[in-house]
Image 1 (spheres, rainbow, N blue to C red):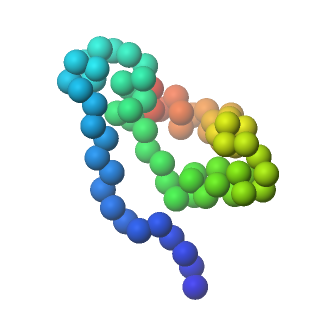
Image 2: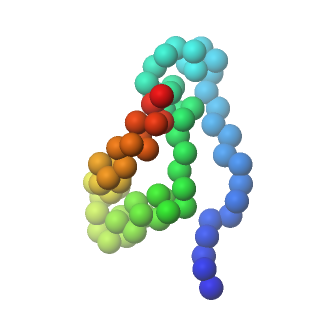
Length: 72
């Protein structure tokens, strides 16, 4: 039996002032998309003993094109 995360709508809420600021962080908040496979990859590395920071860095380093798309 396959396991999966339940389907739900994630509402990302940021202030209008912040959204309109042009900040890279605002672009990231608006553009961020995370799949089950992405989440599972990082979680598996953490469960394998990697620190959350190292697991995140490993994922980001391997998915530069995706991360760049979040900042457009």
